[in-house]
Amino acid sequence: MESDFLKWLSDRLAAHKSVALGPGDDAAILQLAASGRCVVTTDLLTDGVDFRLSDVSPRRIGRKALAVNLSDLAAMAAEPTAAFVSLALPRDGALQLAKELYEGLLPLADKYRVAIAGGDTNTWDGPLVISVTAIGTPSARGTLLRSDARPGDRILVTGCFGGSILSKHFDFEPRVSEAMTLHKNYELRAGMDVSDGLSLDLARLAQASGCGAVLDTSAIPISPDAIKLSQQLADGLSPLDHALADGEDFELLLAAPSREAKRIVRDQPLDVPVTMIGEFVEQPGLWTKGQGGNLQILQPKGYEH
Ligand SMILES: [Mg+2]
Image (tube, rainbow, N blue to C red; front, side, top):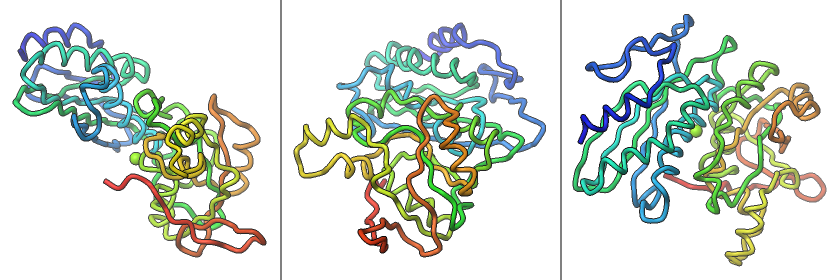
């Protein structure tokens, strides 16, 4: 199966300026930027854990496998360059499944000019496993880490939150161009992508930076799907609860100095809204302001792996 598949795939792959040697040899050779640094991330998706092949089209699975990696590169403000795709396919219908995964993945790779520079394809008696490793190139301004927020910095987010299980968790747009635009034109201090829940990921970013965060819960952009999900489930969780705790929003969570944050919010330089939802403080932990302005602890909630 593998040689048929490689033939099919090689016809689909275009030349790419960063790939000095693509699939076909023992390893690929990448030509990266002169800065000498590259950003590497990897994600593994398994049938039965991250998706159900019986419920979702392979195209959406293939697309998502690349998109989650691009979201992590965006979180670091790195331009996606190349990706390596490894598949463990159930034996029955393996070739067809492999092609469909790629039919979902390749248009996204094209859109963000990511070279598929290599990978591996096997069949076995187990479920579908798809692993993507993506390589990115930092801009001249360097990378964006989780650990550089400072007390007084404002908390910014792109887009809106909650209810992604209704569709966005498969079809989200990785915030690549948004991250590059903000990083290029404004001073950002720290960032990550929100994959496990806004409150949990914010608590992680604050902890990595050795500070705390105060959320203005009234400012959090709540997605229409969070409202819909809250009504559908009728489990007592409000749309805000969903926005704070649901996983897989894949939006950017950023720290910026107060003046820069205000400038970004005023300029609205992206196709998606950027919203200020609070600030970083010296006191460790996650907080909200109660009536009268005193701080109340907010229990971070989200998806723990
Ligand atoms: Mg991430």
